[in-house]
Image (cartoon, rainbow, N blue to C red; front, side):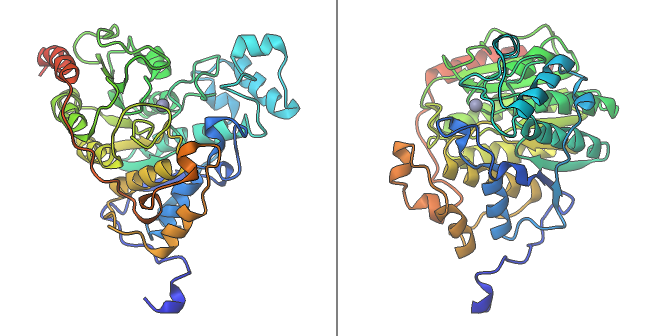
Length: 393
Ligand SMILES: [Zn+2]
């Protein structure tokens, strides 16, 4: 490349999967839940900027998310709750009764300037993705991992539940059997609330044990016997890439393969990564990408979302790599200068980790692999779940 070109945006590289689409929005760039909240950091905008700087994102594969209208969300959410969210954005406040009824205006789920528009935008992406998947395709919608949202209440930083809305919208396209795989450090309690008793939805969740919301016990199989079962795998602190590879090979891939889904939704929160402050799991971003790469071929209709992720460098690098997997780009060993500049522009002064960031948070996309022993508890729990799986494979 000529020297004069180095500072300009790179040309978009050819993707191995040219039909892959990234649904994003500029609304996330300056939106924050508040200066003290874990979601004060930019995430989707970093992923967009980093992807563009790598030449992985351009007008040919980027789609701006529409904002969902309340009526389109009432397939699952309570209209009174949707009205309360809109009112909260207009007035910037909630009264005590609304706070108690809908769990908004709390520390976890604060009122901020885009408290309606932001969740309605990611929900719009979820609905759009489901409509696009009437035809085979691969879609990455990083903002759509809000797996804690409940029908009439905000929950765990989630005001709406994009995975639920997406799965219901896939159903309306005539795609009956949907597999949902959740790799976030927290259990997907909102998605389980919607589908635990649904024989046509397979739910698989790996999450840290003894962590909020404390649902998703190993023994919680939902109401679905056989197909449509729920597989919950609580993980002890310290789980590394080798353990996660075993979980992928013994549980996640066989279960999804046996289910033969019409569509696959994968929630790839990055809070199970070692660099994330909200869990004690110790994955590298390579583990997340490897599991996603192994899952992608199991359906010709796949929606990949983000989720948790509370270290601005770690989440931006991890989610950009997810897009690389979805679209089929190779992760470079060392980031080109425009990509490094995106990461150098981030700051995280409120965190001890952010005051002295290591060099590889600026210069690489991939973490070093996190090898190590596989805890006996992981093997034992896998034995329990694979015994259940064996009934229907
Ligand atoms: Zn999480």
